[in-house]
Length: 362
Image 1 (cartoon, helix red, strand yellow):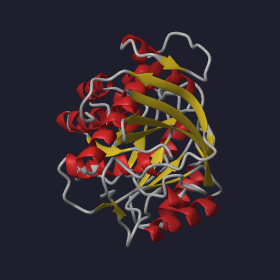
Image 2 (cartoon, one colour):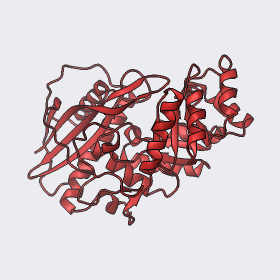
Image 3 (cartoon, one colour):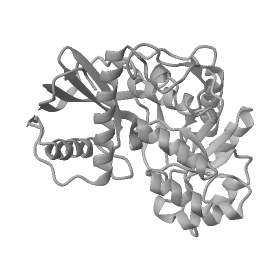
Image 4 (cartoon, rainbow, N blue to C red):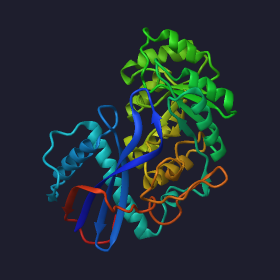
């Protein structure tokens, strides 16, 4: 018999990160435990707050219910019934299930995720993020990140604010600086503010317009010397292909929370195939999720990603992933995808029992 339990954790950030669409002061992460006999496996999925391209906690629960019902698995749920699951819910739930079963198998085989995908290096570089803040505070935060060892700083901006902070960060640091708009600009109404951004020496401008405005993003990419990056517009392999066909971007943020582990590796390859440079994007995960991001980033020796340990941005990491050393993030090297979380105080969202064929964990 294989049993699954879904836990929900609320994680507090050390520094509030203000973006164009929301303020990140706390984050919600979901942890799925798979037990098969004496073996166990774990996975983590950060949950979105509100409507968007990423799955909420309710989405993931709904997706798990649909997947398990399709497999005729018996279930015991502490949550009430949900409506039909959206595609994003199914994708997130499948990624969570696949990762937990993969972790279970890796622990059985005494392999780390990095070893399983052929990584030989011991560490990776990492980038950092600064929210929309007063210019002096933004510059100070960027300098703290550079002292920590970041190779790139991403600064949140919106049509209303953030340009002053961005300029202050550019003056304060020597590492490349990215402006991240989170799709907040309107192609015509915000042109003047957009021009102000594009006059700055940016490494690239990330997600200037909403995902539904890809044609405008492609037009901007053709019209400005500042490279364009995508995040929310790169939520599926099909979306990455479309962006490549339109020459809409030079950089792509690949978030494993959207694709799953195997899907994220494929998304990085797909980006490269279309002439775009991928980096692994984070969502303020706990240590298990960040360990996975680090292994995926190490498989693509190009741009440093959001892979630094949560001890640098969370008040407490339930997984206790080791932090950076001399400007590098060590990869998780013990068996499994990452460190097992301490679920003390976490909320149980779902409990499932599924009959499985006898034999070793898959």
